[in-house]
Length: 340
Ligand SMILES: C[S@@+](CC[C@H](N)C(=O)[O-])C[C@H]1O[C@@H](n2cnc3c(N)ncnc32)[C@H](O)[C@@H]1O
Image (spheres, rainbow, N blue to C red):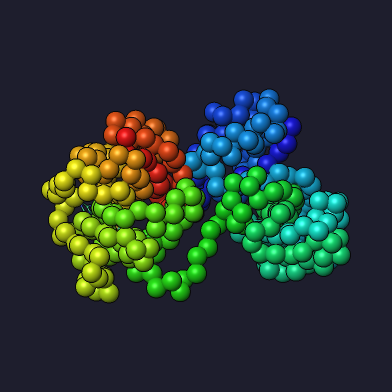
């Protein structure tokens, strides 16, 4: 049996834990940072198949995990904490020989752990290099993960694909210098990566709830023609874009010829069941096999149940491929569908 440290978006750990409880028979769960991090075991399952199943059919709310191979008390003593981390790196030294190694150090708010992420990494980097590893930030062969809670220091070393995300704690960062119109654009960029769905493969997108135009601008940059529907104004910088058509209306009041689009994106700030009805009405406008990326707002008390109901309703017209709470999702999740 292996124990993992799991991370979810703030406030969503209880739902990540609920999902794991349903999927891993006999798993033992224990909260760490309220609402955000927790430990879980592989229970009655063998660790390898348990992990394989989580990778193949990713849970919605579990953003990141790493195996806990060593743990100790957290103190504010720099020398002691550095010695503990270096001892762990030495223990897993064989794996790191000749390997690109990322060192990811995180801590719970108000933990006495005396290092920042960068300082923690710098405290172990010489040991990794001495062991024959090359310290890298991205595209690593191995990730040494350190998480300091208020009480304990958890350490593990794993392959990036086994962590669900190769970002520290699954916190995907994009550079702010990409001329973004709204922060919402990060959601679309993250969805593109998470669902492995290069947007430049599509040619004509329907963007519902498009204003001020963050998602539209990403799609235009990728070379798509975009039809944006939103009663609100689009950003001035997009107004004259030759590949953008803005329809200033409620999405419930528009219609298009069958098969007009091969991509639908929808980030409408509205009740998710209303949104589902509008999107389903417009489904014939999406060509068979076309994709959809849809934000599902979680405005009800039972998010897991809400998602189940929505998946069922969307399934009438779409094949639901994946639902995931992205790092850039707040009180919502993102769904990838394909038109039947
Ligand atoms: C979160 S914003 C979208 C942000 C956008 N994705 C971006 O990247 O800039 C939500 C938008 O949904 C629009 N909206 C809400 N209900 C709508 C409806 N029934 N029809 C069309 N747009 C709607 C709002 O006007 C608002 O501009």
